[in-house]
Length: 155
Image 1 (cartoon, rainbow, N blue to C red):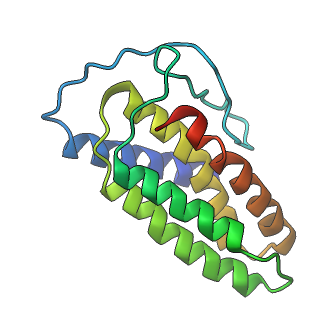
Image 2: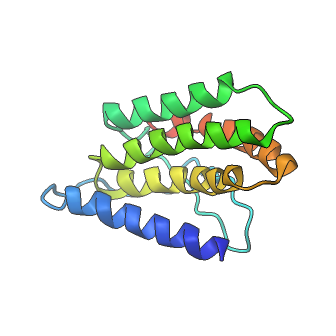
Image 3: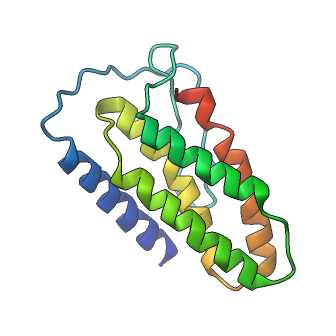
């Protein structure tokens, strides 16, 4: 069920972003350099992030700002024994996460690489919605790990 929700969200998000940018030409060429696998804990094989012919993908300012907001909120969060604090954090992160998708202007392979970066984050946000305190604590660590990957692949 969780995989179905994640895949449905990913599909809707990709279609929404592509519909916003359908008039923009796709000129970026994919490459297979500098592969980093995002954090994914399910049976499916994670999709690897790659650089743009050895260079970082150029992201729009709003995307970079949104990722910075996610990072700041995660880094400022103090581990708690109260599940409600994780739910509150999750609502804040979900808001910033949705803004990234709404303000998405990337196209082509760079756009696909952004989604490869964001899908593991969405999966961890689903964990924070739940009532498992230990899983939520682990999710915070996984989110921190995933968010530090952004500047390695995007500028």
